[in-house]
Structures are given as structure tokens and as C-alpha cells.
Length: 399
Image (cartoon, rainbow, N blue to C red):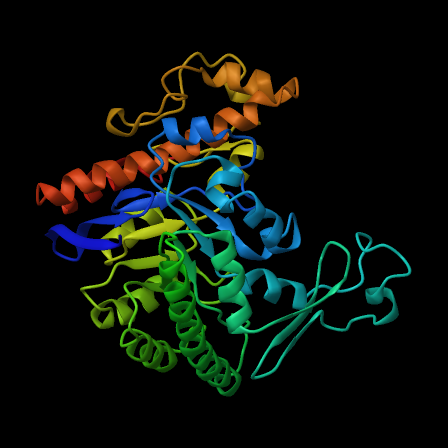
């Protein structure tokens, strides 16, 4: 049920059609993030209306609450959410990694494990397993690559991610290499368990799943190169790239993509895990990336920021009080919100604390990114992606 076909190319940009058990996906594609089986403040009907082709949920959060077994009792994630779109469950290592940096804070209740072990990391890593404590109740959990595959099998997403380690951005070369080699071994174990589970699914007449391995390893060119060479040879249909580590600069990512792009397997779709702003989408498509995700569009929407064709618009700006015009968006990228609601009205919603503002800005930001991918696809098919890219940049950053 998984088929992959390149339809057109324009230099390093390309378009694909992926066939999945829950529908086709046309690339380039941006995936809205429904971390806990919902995109915050937005209904699934609205997600469908803005041309979303696939959405993402988070394995770590769903495992903790409501639990993979409860979701399985609803006949898996699609039926639990009651949505007929392809779903990807992302690698949860970023969340586990983040827990490792938690320390005593005012948000942690007294008389807990963390109070008793001040400054102690909530994560421990060995070759065989990762141990962590839940950020919800500090309960203990142990995970192996096999268990990660088993949980994602129960969730029944169409696309699942191998278990990996997200090394800290300030890791030494020595530690980054150890983490990379461990992740390679985990990827092999993940794939072996994934294949075993798919045989069982086939015997039970269940729809199949497919798995991504993930390229990691901070800003070290040699490790990134070594990682892509190892993972591209695994018997998988796709390959994913994590955003360096956490919060490195865009300049570092561009540099790393320029190193990796010639090494990426041309016959496999490429998924960049994490995206910041619209210009990232335009540039990453230019650098041979097919799939993207990020929580930032909806997070910014809930925090008063709208994407536009000139830059990000901060709705708290007083100059918008009497502004009758709409969010400044080029006609080819216009969204329903940018064509319907004035900046003055959106600012009014914000300053009267009407929560509709967060929903409208979140919808606008998601649709704006979707529209970029649609127009990019059309430009690639016409052999005019460079023209589209230049047109985008002619206005962007013009604050």
C-alpha cells in the first residue's frame, strides 16, 4: 500500500506522490502537528479544509496520556481522532532528551523524586535501554528500540520513526560519535522489530506501516556524512534528518544540508524534522527536502504572531488598532483568514481576550505554509522554482 513516485524535478527541488493506506500525499508537504492527537485550538474539520494532507502526533505524549493501550482499544489512532488522513508518529527522543535537562523549579511539586534528587538528570542511557521519568507524575519508564516500535504499532500510524538519540548541541566529538553509533545500532534493531511486527499485521489483515531512520549528530560534518551513508543503505523507504540538535542557528543547518544533500538517496523521500518560518520552507525545498513539520505555526498563532509575505506580524502592535487592511500576503499565497479579517479586528480579538484570535492566527499560519508548498509544487512542475523562490524573497524581510 506504500508507493513512491517522483513526478517532476527542477534542479534540486522535486515533487513526489506517496500512496499510503489512508490516502495519497503530494510533496513538498508541511505536516501540522497534533502532539496529543489534536492540533491545539483547531478542529480536524478545519485541518482538512486548509488542504492538510498528513498530520503528525507525538509518541511520547500519547504513550503517557491517554496511553497506547487505550488508543488501541479505540481501534487505533485514526479512529480515536476520527480523521481519515495519513498520520506520522514522530521520534520521541527529543522529549526524553528535554527531560534530561529538567532541574528543580517552581513547576515541580514538593516531595517528589526530583526534590529528593536535586540536579539529577531525569534520563539515563545504556546500550540496551533508555530510562526516564514522566514529566507528568515522575513515574519510571524504560524503553528499548523494540518497545518504541511496539508502541507505535499499537498507535497504528502510517509512518513511524526509529528510536534514536538526540545528542546535546554542545556534545564533544567523542560523545557525539558514541551517540551516533548507538543510534545506528538502535536503527537496525528498530527496523528488525518493525519488520517482525509488519509480518504479524499482514497475517491479521491489518494495514501496513512504514518506518523512517533518522540522521543526527550535531554540527560535525564528518559524523553527519558517516550517518547518512550508514542509514541510506538500510532497507527503508524514507530517510529523516533531525535539526542538528536543539536550537542551533539556521546558518548551521544550511551548512549541514549543503553537506548532506549530495549524499541523500535520490530514490527516497527526505523528511526534515522541524521548521521555523516560511523562508525555511522555501529554502529547504530548494535543498532537496520533501517533508516538514513544526509546532511553531500554531504556537506563534496562540502568541499573537501571524506569518505574512513581508515578515512575521506581531498583533500586539498599536499601529493596527485602526488598520482596515488584512494580513499582508501575496495573492498567490493568500489564506482564508488573510482575505476575511482585518488587522484591526484581529487585534481587537486579542485585546478583549477572545480566544478566537488564537484559532484564526493558527489557521492562517498553517494555511500560509500549505499554500507555499502548493505554489512550490506548481513551480517545480513548470520548471520555474527559482523564479518562485526569487519572487518570495523580493518582498520577504521588508519590515
